[in-house]
Image (tube, rainbow, N blue to C red; front, side, top):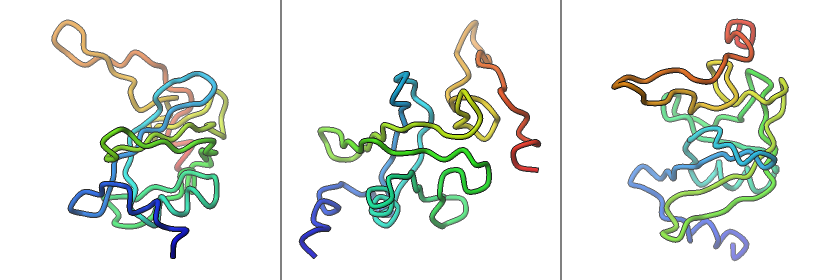
Length: 132
């Protein structure tokens, strides 16, 4: 069991989850924020592919399982408080890579301006064409 001790170093929240930021290795773009439980982090480290925990579905979620937009993981980092993870990834699928279920490169596509949120990044592919 000593090989899994590194999982004990993570400060899991009361639900047994930790927030995870996915950052594109090549550009440095922040693609998304998701959540992991112990099993998701264990599988991500073992497979070199992003596996998250879907809070809405209550189960593991292999990024790209429905869309084909898989994230290859190059590096897993933890912050100084050990309560946030950072994945450095290559976003696979449509190029440039689509990480967001809205068909955009990043989930952070809206910017605050003039007192309102404004979408500033284009839809790269219609989500209906991705998810059916």
